[in-house]
Amino acid sequence: MELKINKDLEKVIAKMFPEQYETLKNSIKEIGLKEPIEAMFDGTIVDGHHRYKACKELGIEPSYNILKDIKTLEQAKEYAVVINIARRHLNSFQKAEMGMALLEVEKELADKRGHGKVPASPNDETPSHGRTATYEVAKKIGLSEKTFERAKTVIEKAPEGIQDLTVNENLEIATAFRLVQHLDSEEHPVPDKKKEAFYEQVIDADEHERNKVLESVCKIVEETNTAKSLLEMTEEEIAKSIKADYKDKFYTEELMSEEIRHAIAVAEGQTPKQKVVYVPWENFENADNPELAAENFFKKYGGGFEEKVTIVMTKGKVDPYKWKKREEEE
Image (cartoon, rainbow, N blue to C red; front, side):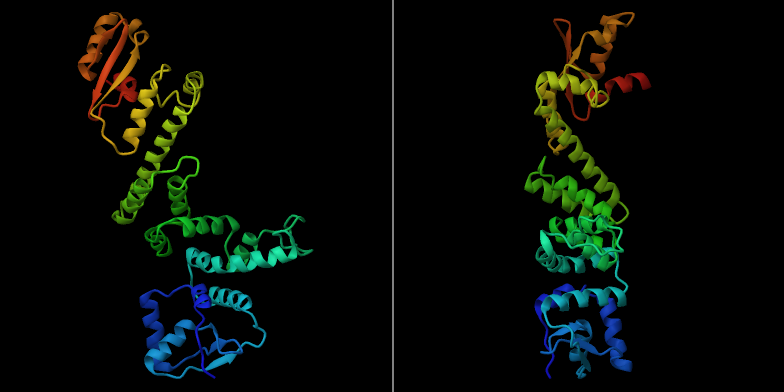
Protein backbone atom coordinates (compact mmCIF):
# COMPACT_ATOMS: atom_id res chain seq x y z
CA MET A 1 0.00 0.00 0.00
CA GLU A 2 1.23 3.48 -0.82
CA LEU A 3 1.52 5.90 2.07
CA LYS A 4 0.18 9.43 1.61
CA ILE A 5 0.12 12.75 3.46
CA ASN A 6 -3.03 14.64 4.41
CA LYS A 7 -2.12 18.35 4.60
CA ASP A 8 -4.65 19.11 7.38
CA LEU A 9 -3.29 16.25 9.46
CA GLU A 10 0.32 17.21 8.75
CA LYS A 11 -0.32 20.75 10.09
CA VAL A 12 -1.22 19.28 13.48
CA ILE A 13 2.34 18.04 14.03
CA ALA A 14 4.86 20.49 15.46
CA LYS A 15 7.62 21.12 12.94
CA MET A 16 11.13 19.99 13.84
CA PHE A 17 13.91 22.54 14.01
CA PRO A 18 16.39 22.05 11.10
CA GLU A 19 19.07 20.59 13.35
CA GLN A 20 16.57 18.13 14.86
CA TYR A 21 15.48 16.97 11.41
CA GLU A 22 19.09 16.48 10.29
CA THR A 23 19.78 14.40 13.42
CA LEU A 24 16.73 12.22 12.65
CA LYS A 25 17.75 11.84 9.01
CA ASN A 26 21.32 10.84 9.90
CA SER A 27 20.01 8.31 12.42
CA ILE A 28 17.77 6.67 9.80
CA LYS A 29 20.68 6.63 7.34
CA GLU A 30 23.01 4.92 9.81
CA ILE A 31 20.76 2.46 11.66
CA GLY A 32 17.49 2.48 9.73
CA LEU A 33 13.94 3.35 10.78
CA LYS A 34 13.48 2.28 14.42
CA GLU A 35 9.81 3.29 14.75
CA PRO A 36 7.50 2.27 11.89
CA ILE A 37 5.19 4.94 10.46
CA GLU A 38 1.56 4.69 11.62
CA ALA A 39 -1.20 5.15 9.09
CA MET A 40 -4.96 4.84 8.61
CA PHE A 41 -6.53 2.00 6.63
CA ASP A 42 -6.26 4.01 3.37
CA GLY A 43 -2.54 4.77 3.84
CA THR A 44 -2.96 8.29 5.24
CA ILE A 45 -0.04 8.93 7.60
CA VAL A 46 -1.14 9.65 11.17
CA ASP A 47 2.23 9.66 12.92
CA GLY A 48 5.66 9.78 11.30
CA HIS A 49 5.54 12.65 8.79
CA HIS A 50 9.15 13.65 9.45
CA ARG A 51 10.35 10.03 9.31
CA TYR A 52 8.48 9.51 6.04
CA LYS A 53 10.05 12.62 4.50
CA ALA A 54 13.54 11.58 5.63
CA CYS A 55 13.09 8.08 4.19
CA LYS A 56 11.97 9.50 0.85
CA GLU A 57 14.99 11.80 0.72
CA LEU A 58 17.29 8.87 1.53
CA GLY A 59 15.63 6.51 -0.94
CA ILE A 60 14.54 4.12 1.82
CA GLU A 61 11.18 2.34 1.74
CA PRO A 62 9.64 2.96 5.19
CA SER A 63 7.93 0.29 7.24
CA TYR A 64 4.46 1.06 8.58
CA ASN A 65 1.62 -0.13 10.81
CA ILE A 66 -2.12 0.31 10.20
CA LEU A 67 -4.09 1.83 13.09
CA LYS A 68 -7.32 -0.17 12.83
CA ASP A 69 -9.17 1.86 15.47
CA ILE A 70 -8.49 5.22 13.78
CA LYS A 71 -11.28 5.68 11.25
CA THR A 72 -11.86 9.46 11.06
CA LEU A 73 -9.65 12.50 10.54
CA GLU A 74 -10.70 13.82 13.96
CA GLN A 75 -9.54 10.62 15.65
CA ALA A 76 -6.30 10.76 13.69
CA LYS A 77 -5.58 14.35 14.77
CA GLU A 78 -6.17 13.57 18.42
CA TYR A 79 -3.98 10.44 18.28
CA ALA A 80 -1.18 12.29 16.47
CA VAL A 81 -1.11 15.14 18.98
CA VAL A 82 -1.17 12.94 22.07
CA ILE A 83 1.51 10.52 20.87
CA ASN A 84 3.83 13.27 19.57
CA ILE A 85 3.64 15.17 22.84
CA ALA A 86 4.46 11.97 24.72
CA ARG A 87 7.34 11.01 22.42
CA ARG A 88 8.99 14.34 21.56
CA HIS A 89 10.59 16.96 23.78
CA LEU A 90 8.28 19.86 22.97
CA ASN A 91 8.18 23.19 24.78
CA SER A 92 4.91 24.68 26.00
CA PHE A 93 4.32 26.85 22.94
CA GLN A 94 4.87 23.92 20.56
CA LYS A 95 2.35 21.91 22.57
CA ALA A 96 -0.12 24.79 22.35
CA GLU A 97 0.35 24.99 18.57
CA MET A 98 -0.55 21.31 18.30
CA GLY A 99 -3.45 21.81 20.70
CA MET A 100 -5.03 24.41 18.41
CA ALA A 101 -5.86 21.70 15.88
CA LEU A 102 -7.56 19.67 18.59
CA LEU A 103 -9.61 22.60 19.80
CA GLU A 104 -11.98 22.55 16.83
CA VAL A 105 -12.38 18.80 17.20
CA GLU A 106 -13.15 19.14 20.92
CA LYS A 107 -15.62 21.97 20.29
CA GLU A 108 -17.51 19.84 17.79
CA LEU A 109 -17.60 16.93 20.21
CA ALA A 110 -18.63 19.22 23.06
CA ASP A 111 -21.48 20.70 21.02
CA LYS A 112 -22.77 17.21 20.27
CA ARG A 113 -22.70 16.40 24.00
CA GLY A 114 -24.59 19.52 24.92
CA HIS A 115 -24.16 23.28 24.54
CA GLY A 116 -20.37 23.50 24.36
CA LYS A 117 -19.71 21.46 27.51
CA VAL A 118 -18.22 18.01 27.94
CA PRO A 119 -19.74 16.29 30.99
CA ALA A 120 -17.20 15.64 33.72
CA SER A 121 -16.46 12.11 34.88
CA PRO A 122 -17.70 11.10 38.37
CA ASN A 123 -14.14 11.04 39.75
CA ASP A 124 -13.20 14.43 38.31
CA GLU A 125 -13.00 17.41 40.67
CA THR A 126 -14.21 19.77 37.93
CA PRO A 127 -17.54 21.54 38.78
CA SER A 128 -20.57 19.47 37.85
CA HIS A 129 -21.74 21.93 35.18
CA GLY A 130 -19.05 20.55 32.84
CA ARG A 131 -15.73 21.44 31.28
CA THR A 132 -14.91 23.72 28.39
CA ALA A 133 -13.31 22.46 25.18
CA THR A 134 -10.24 24.57 26.04
CA TYR A 135 -9.91 22.74 29.35
CA GLU A 136 -10.14 19.35 27.61
CA VAL A 137 -7.45 20.23 25.07
CA ALA A 138 -5.14 21.76 27.69
CA LYS A 139 -5.36 18.56 29.74
CA LYS A 140 -4.52 16.38 26.72
CA ILE A 141 -1.47 18.42 25.72
CA GLY A 142 -0.16 18.72 29.27
CA LEU A 143 -0.67 22.45 29.87
CA SER A 144 -2.74 24.43 32.35
CA GLU A 145 -5.86 25.99 30.87
CA LYS A 146 -4.46 29.47 31.63
CA THR A 147 -1.18 28.80 29.77
CA PHE A 148 -3.03 27.32 26.79
CA GLU A 149 -5.42 30.30 26.67
CA ARG A 150 -2.47 32.72 26.65
CA ALA A 151 -0.61 30.78 23.97
CA LYS A 152 -3.83 30.57 21.94
CA THR A 153 -4.13 34.38 22.02
CA VAL A 154 -0.53 34.76 20.81
CA ILE A 155 -1.10 32.23 18.01
CA GLU A 156 -4.32 33.93 16.88
CA LYS A 157 -3.24 37.58 17.13
CA ALA A 158 0.54 38.00 17.18
CA PRO A 159 2.55 38.34 13.94
CA GLU A 160 4.68 35.42 12.82
CA GLY A 161 7.89 37.03 14.12
CA ILE A 162 6.54 37.12 17.70
CA GLN A 163 5.34 33.52 17.41
CA ASP A 164 8.77 32.45 16.16
CA LEU A 165 10.44 34.12 19.14
CA THR A 166 8.03 32.33 21.47
CA VAL A 167 8.38 28.89 19.91
CA ASN A 168 12.19 29.28 20.05
CA GLU A 169 11.84 30.30 23.73
CA ASN A 170 13.28 33.78 23.18
CA LEU A 171 10.02 35.11 24.63
CA GLU A 172 8.03 33.48 27.40
CA ILE A 173 4.36 32.80 26.66
CA ALA A 174 3.24 35.13 29.47
CA THR A 175 5.46 37.94 28.12
CA ALA A 176 4.27 37.53 24.52
CA PHE A 177 0.67 37.43 25.78
CA ARG A 178 1.18 40.70 27.68
CA LEU A 179 2.46 42.40 24.53
CA VAL A 180 -0.52 41.16 22.50
CA GLN A 181 -2.90 42.34 25.22
CA HIS A 182 -1.47 45.85 24.96
CA LEU A 183 -1.31 46.09 21.17
CA ASP A 184 -4.58 44.32 20.36
CA SER A 185 -6.82 45.93 22.96
CA GLU A 186 -10.44 46.23 21.82
CA GLU A 187 -11.07 49.01 24.32
CA HIS A 188 -8.19 51.19 23.10
CA PRO A 189 -7.10 49.90 19.68
CA VAL A 190 -3.63 50.87 18.52
CA PRO A 191 -3.52 52.20 14.91
CA ASP A 192 -2.45 49.43 12.52
CA LYS A 193 0.76 51.11 11.33
CA LYS A 194 1.79 51.95 14.88
CA LYS A 195 0.97 48.44 16.08
CA GLU A 196 3.08 46.94 13.29
CA ALA A 197 5.97 49.28 14.18
CA PHE A 198 5.74 48.32 17.87
CA TYR A 199 5.81 44.60 17.05
CA GLU A 200 8.82 45.14 14.75
CA GLN A 201 10.68 46.94 17.53
CA VAL A 202 10.37 43.85 19.73
CA ILE A 203 11.16 41.40 16.92
CA ASP A 204 14.24 43.31 15.73
CA ALA A 205 15.58 44.07 19.22
CA ASP A 206 18.89 42.64 20.34
CA GLU A 207 18.44 39.40 22.28
CA HIS A 208 19.71 40.98 25.51
CA GLU A 209 17.61 44.15 25.09
CA ARG A 210 14.35 42.56 23.89
CA ASN A 211 12.57 42.45 27.26
CA LYS A 212 13.53 46.06 27.94
CA VAL A 213 12.16 47.11 24.52
CA LEU A 214 8.97 45.15 25.16
CA GLU A 215 8.48 46.82 28.55
CA SER A 216 9.00 50.22 26.91
CA VAL A 217 6.34 49.47 24.29
CA CYS A 218 3.86 48.34 26.94
CA LYS A 219 4.53 51.47 29.01
CA ILE A 220 3.92 53.74 26.02
CA VAL A 221 0.60 52.03 25.29
CA GLU A 222 -0.45 52.18 28.95
CA GLU A 223 0.28 55.92 29.14
CA THR A 224 -1.57 56.53 25.87
CA ASN A 225 -4.60 54.59 27.09
CA THR A 226 -4.60 56.54 30.37
CA ALA A 227 -4.67 59.80 28.44
CA LYS A 228 -7.39 58.54 26.09
CA SER A 229 -9.49 57.42 29.04
CA LEU A 230 -9.22 60.89 30.57
CA LEU A 231 -10.26 62.53 27.32
CA GLU A 232 -13.49 60.54 27.40
CA MET A 233 -14.41 62.00 30.81
CA THR A 234 -16.20 65.19 31.68
CA GLU A 235 -14.25 67.94 33.44
CA GLU A 236 -15.86 66.97 36.75
CA GLU A 237 -14.93 63.30 36.25
CA ILE A 238 -11.39 64.29 35.38
CA ALA A 239 -11.04 66.33 38.56
CA LYS A 240 -12.26 63.38 40.65
CA SER A 241 -9.93 60.98 38.86
CA ILE A 242 -6.96 63.26 39.42
CA LYS A 243 -7.68 63.31 43.14
CA ALA A 244 -7.68 59.53 43.17
CA ASP A 245 -5.88 57.35 40.63
CA TYR A 246 -3.96 59.97 38.67
CA LYS A 247 -2.76 62.25 41.47
CA ASP A 248 0.86 61.16 41.05
CA LYS A 249 0.77 61.10 37.26
CA PHE A 250 -0.56 64.58 36.54
CA TYR A 251 0.74 67.53 38.50
CA THR A 252 -2.40 69.67 38.79
CA GLU A 253 -6.09 69.10 39.36
CA GLU A 254 -6.86 71.82 36.81
CA LEU A 255 -6.05 69.44 33.98
CA MET A 256 -6.76 70.87 30.54
CA SER A 257 -7.85 68.63 27.66
CA GLU A 258 -5.06 70.12 25.55
CA GLU A 259 -2.54 68.69 28.01
CA ILE A 260 -4.05 65.25 27.63
CA ARG A 261 -3.90 65.50 23.84
CA HIS A 262 -0.26 66.45 24.17
CA ALA A 263 0.34 63.40 26.39
CA ILE A 264 -1.25 61.19 23.72
CA ALA A 265 0.91 62.73 20.99
CA VAL A 266 4.09 62.14 22.99
CA ALA A 267 3.07 58.60 23.98
CA GLU A 268 2.33 57.73 20.34
CA GLY A 269 5.81 58.81 19.32
CA GLN A 270 5.09 62.28 17.99
CA THR A 271 7.33 65.22 18.95
CA PRO A 272 5.25 68.38 19.49
CA LYS A 273 7.51 71.45 19.43
CA GLN A 274 5.83 73.14 22.35
CA LYS A 275 2.91 72.99 24.71
CA VAL A 276 1.13 75.38 27.05
CA VAL A 277 0.94 74.16 30.62
CA TYR A 278 -1.17 76.04 33.15
CA VAL A 279 0.28 76.02 36.66
CA PRO A 280 -1.99 77.45 39.39
CA TRP A 281 -0.60 80.47 41.25
CA GLU A 282 -1.32 78.63 44.51
CA ASN A 283 1.77 76.51 43.89
CA PHE A 284 3.94 79.54 44.75
CA GLU A 285 1.85 81.27 47.44
CA ASN A 286 3.46 79.42 50.35
CA ALA A 287 6.97 80.48 49.36
CA ASP A 288 8.69 83.28 51.32
CA ASN A 289 8.75 85.29 48.12
CA PRO A 290 6.08 83.93 45.71
CA GLU A 291 7.09 86.22 42.83
CA LEU A 292 10.75 85.19 43.13
CA ALA A 293 9.82 81.50 43.37
CA ALA A 294 7.73 81.79 40.21
CA GLU A 295 10.46 83.77 38.44
CA ASN A 296 13.04 81.09 39.24
CA PHE A 297 10.66 78.46 37.98
CA PHE A 298 10.23 80.36 34.67
CA LYS A 299 13.99 80.57 34.23
CA LYS A 300 14.16 76.78 34.27
CA TYR A 301 11.08 75.94 32.25
CA GLY A 302 10.03 79.14 30.47
CA GLY A 303 6.70 80.91 30.78
CA GLY A 304 5.19 83.86 32.61
CA PHE A 305 2.23 85.33 34.54
CA GLU A 306 -1.26 85.82 33.20
CA GLU A 307 -3.70 87.12 35.82
CA LYS A 308 -1.99 85.14 38.59
CA VAL A 309 -2.02 81.94 36.57
CA THR A 310 1.43 80.91 35.40
CA ILE A 311 1.91 79.82 31.82
CA VAL A 312 4.79 77.51 31.04
CA MET A 313 5.94 76.90 27.48
CA THR A 314 7.69 73.52 27.44
CA LYS A 315 9.98 72.39 24.66
CA GLY A 316 12.09 69.34 23.90
CA LYS A 317 12.27 66.79 26.69
CA VAL A 318 11.03 69.01 29.53
CA ASP A 319 8.43 67.02 31.46
CA PRO A 320 6.00 69.35 33.27
CA TYR A 321 4.43 66.40 35.11
CA LYS A 322 7.64 65.88 37.06
CA TRP A 323 8.65 69.45 37.88
CA LYS A 324 7.61 69.21 41.54
CA LYS A 325 9.79 66.15 42.04
CA ARG A 326 12.75 67.88 40.41
CA GLU A 327 12.29 70.90 42.67
CA GLU A 328 12.36 68.63 45.73
CA GLU A 329 15.47 66.77 44.54
CA GLU A 330 17.35 70.00 43.91
